[in-house]
Image (cartoon, rainbow, N blue to C red):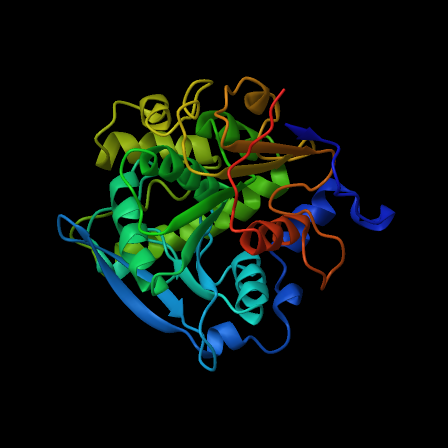
Length: 331
C-alpha cells in the first residue's frame, strides 16, 4: 500500500470540495476533443435482451497503442467531465477509447424497460468483454470512477476466473466499497445530497416519460434523501426486501478482492466526502493489487491544476507505457 505518495496539489486546491467540484466541472472539458470527434455510438447486446450504450473512438490517423474502457459513476455518464478529460488525454497519447454508459445513464433510458441497479454486474461484464474485442489484438485497460470504480473492482474479481480479451489491467478511482455507507455520507452532506437528488430525479422523470405504463415515481421524487428514495423504489419495483439487502448485493467486504489475479490499482483519498477511508484498511489484497491512499483528492479529484492531468491519469500513463505489470505492494 502506498500512503502519502506523490499527489500534493497546490495549497489553493487542497480543500476537499475544490477537488470534488472540479472533478465534475465542465471547465475542464473546454477546448477541442479529438476523442469525441472520432467517436461513434455502439449498442451492445449484453444478453437476456439487455442493451447498453457505448461510444467508441478509434485512432483515425495511426494504429492505436491499445484500448481503454472507461466507466462513469452513479448518475454520471460517458460525457461526465472526468470521463471526457481522461479519455481525451489517453486518446491524444494514441489509445483508442470506449466509454460505456451504465443502464439508464446518459441518454440510454430508452434501451431497456427495467431500471438500473448497482447489482447488475453481468450486463456490464459482458459489455466490457465485447468492447475489448475492439482492441485489434492490443492491450485493454479498464478504469472506473466511484460507482464505476465499484463495478471495476467486481470486474477485476470476475476477470480472474472469466477472462476478458487482452486485459492488461484495471484501475478503480474513488470506488464505493459499501454503498450503504456511501449513501449515508451523501445524505449527511447538504451539497452532495442536493447534487445527486437533482440528477436522480431527472433520470427517473426520463424513465417514467418513456415507460408511463410501468413506472410512476410521483410519490418518490419528493422524498428528501437518497436513502428514502432507494427504500421506496426497491420496495415498489425491485427484487430486494429493502435497501440494505439491495446494497449488500454489491458491497465489497474485507475478503472480496483477495483472489484477484489481474493487475489492479485502487486510488482513494482520506478526505473523500463520499467514500469512507476506513473501509479500505480492512481489505485483504492479492499480490497483483496496489492500493494507493492520498491525504488529498476529494472524490474523483486528484487534480494538480484546472487544466492539468490528474494524479491518476499520470499513473495510468505509467501503467500503460509499462505494459501494466502486476506487482502490487502491500503492508
